Image 1 (tube, rainbow, N blue to C red):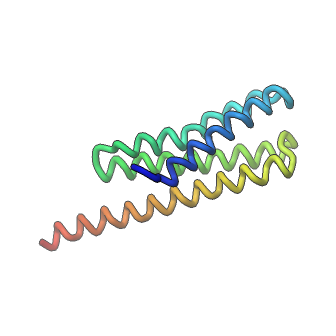
Image 2: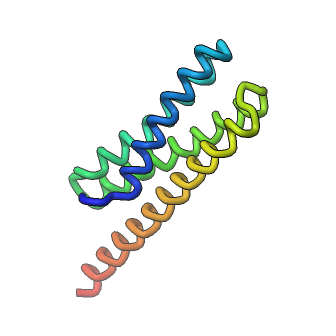
Image 3: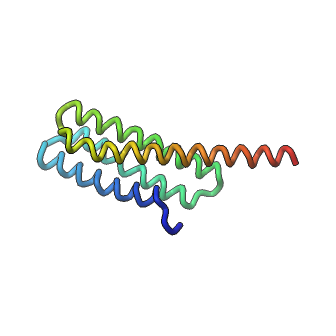
Length: 127
């Protein structure tokens, strides 16, 4: 895939998550929530990478569904870190906006892929 927007965005997002984890560990001495954030935030891109080489359309959908769940979990950890004052408004806003954007993007790709799979299955039945 040449210019894969979701792949690029999820990789850039993972870099930001790693740096945020380092900031939370070094400057805020927060280790538990940030570890959860690190796991889910970097997993999004990893699942998208796995989907690149899916064995079937169903496998692709499955991997993207996991990426979607990980993105949603990441939003949760970011909101919890903000609510517990580990992240200030400025630290939270930009990365939260990116997380929501990736969540929306994965949701859109997932919906389109499911619709394509259903259309293909319907076409097979009708032929």
